[in-house]
Length: 169
Image 1: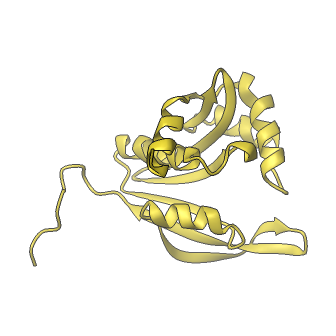
Image 2 (image 1 turned 90 degrees about the vertical axis):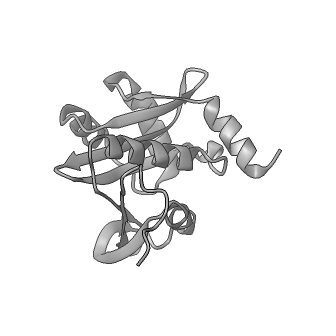
């Protein structure tokens, strides 16, 4: 089976569902293992209270990843996307990202933004491969061991589903 076939099979064995307050212990456990400067319970709770599209990816009833999105007018912002470190490298992050973009598209969003650390080449490669482009930089955006780290700002323009080829010039 090809690498893409394996990724698709593993993603299809997973279930995506809305995040609930009861998921926060599992989400926080993943967040703390995945990031040196994790979000707090309060940040996740505030996202849920604000009604932001917040999703968990489960496998056999266990949370293995999550993604959160904010939508305002015709723009969306990927706030956080994460797969448990022991489950990374299997296409699940791509599955989550595509699900968030699909949700945004369903809300008539025209543009999706995100920030990523320059020190995270795997995430940058994923975002590029899904059509995101670097559009700017936010200086000193993230906390880092030696002070602060910039953020790369990336975006993708969403075009209507019915466009299958570029029009002639």
